[in-house]
Image (cartoon, rainbow, N blue to C red; front, side):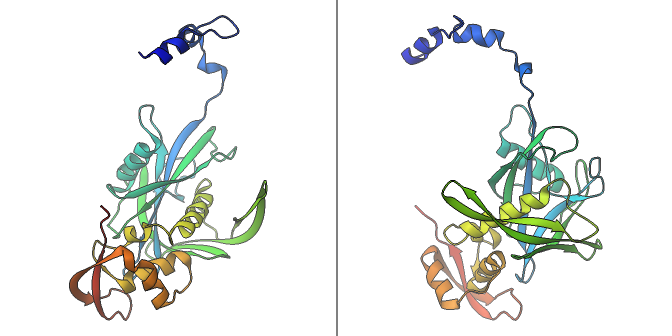
Length: 282
């Protein structure tokens, strides 16, 4: 124990208690404590890179039984939120070892009908759409086509016969001198995402759009080797707008290394193009 720690442990509060005495008498039951979950929004590209896919699980228990939701679960006592997200991801979908980054903490009162529950949301990005199945307490798992625009969210899986749709209204909020825009969802379909998971989807997509132009997240949505048309399709799917070919290539060129081989791009109507990898930083 260093000198600073010894001095702090010997200090007394207004009641004349040292830190050790205070902790011995402390009753955590004096304050109601929330349960905390980790929920994960998992994105990938479809086969021809024409759009995004979102992984959803079908809940097998109350609340929201039989509703589609983001994978997730409660954080255990001796793990971090990140460890819980990674564990739940593997338990409910079988996916592991993929990009995982924290998005936001959701604390709205009443967001879970069981009790006071806060959620720490994560974004996961996958380069390939592996086959998934419902595990643990998930009845089913499936990849859904995701269309996210400034006016709507559409989630659909033709095989499952499921379509979920929200309209989006833009509202401006003030935080001191800072103003920012957010999307307010309104359900337009018979089926809905469970809990407040549509809000998690909105926040994750907003954050990804804001970061994609100056980060390497797009490279988590392509294979280790890729063509420039494939990479550009990733950026365009996330940003929901076309990019000028030359401007795009100027933007990413310093990040790329040629492999020395060529192949046909997987995009619709793709031509033979050079292959690249992400340049490894030293």
